[in-house]
Amino acid sequence: MLLEVTQVFDGHNDVLSALERFGVDEAVQLFEFGCDTALDLVKAQRGGFAGGLFAVYVPDDRNPANLETLREATYHIPNPKPIHWTDALARIKGQVALLLELKSRGLLKLCLCSADIRQAMNSNRLAAVLHVEGADLIDPELHVLELLYAAGMRSLGLVWNRPTIFAQGVPYSFPSSPNIGDGLSKLGRQLVLRCNQLGIIVDLSHINEAGFWDVAEVTSHPLVASHSNSHAICPHARNLTDNQLRAIASTNGIVGINFSVSFLRDDGRKLSDVPIDQVLRHFDHLLGILGEDCIGLGSDYDGTITPREIADVSTLPKLINAMQKHGYGDELVEKICRANWLRVLKTTWEECGSNQPTVEIRNE
Ligand code: ZN
Image (cartoon, rainbow, N blue to C red):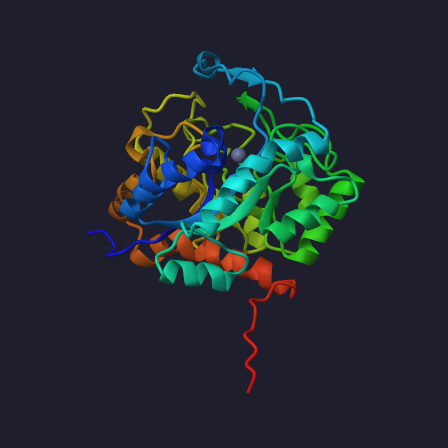
């Protein structure tokens, strides 16, 4: 039997970039009343999707990845070239504007601290955390970092696929190892330290292995890979090796399971005929190394091709049902679906001491 109400908090979606092309007004309507994206308010209510990290990023302006190529047994798509931070900033402002408009129309709550998430979930309002996927838009002086923080950003990936002045990402290749390229630049280390001070999550999905270990050395926060799977099962560089998983577990961090078929399938192909059992194989492997407290969801909805059976957020109960049939107890399901994410966010945001929820001052 399904848990009565399973509120899901998810580590990664790309709905803002998926809706950006419609312009803010139309995009808001589509999000509110439903459309063909994997995430909208109608599907969220149906599937118990209560919130998550909402990503903004600078897409690849080249022709979309050649899907035929990705169906081959092996493929290699080189990373896009780096772009100047001013161009990157101009390119994501529409996505941020859409998020802020959804907030101002009351369709979601932009969450700046754990209390905000709790309040949103208790009042049935979608809880959104602004995640910037790739630091392409941050200047060498880190002024834009402060600007983004002021706008509500609470999670940052140092890199998407293209290199930045801070770090290097892995290419979209299969099979591939994350052990490619150099680690963090000096600026990259400074960026991590400033994120620590502000209480911004430093997301390790997409970063190469040398960069991963550099962040692990520099940061004082739990390690987070918001949307990555097991490299032992699917040898794609976007997935995490067992050593990386052990490092994340040692900091009481989190890995969000990615629903992308390319990171789930043993053969890495972009084909959607993937049974839910394959998702559970990744869960089992990760649980074996991470234990029950360091694993969550990182669906990547609206950023990728997902298994047909769990094609959008309304189908999340199917996944939960499959977990239960697979023998996961209610407590573990709850940890995977939300509790682990909420614990890691709370630790990261509140340990730095600069981001406590506002205390109401009464005039007595
Ligand atoms: Zn991503």
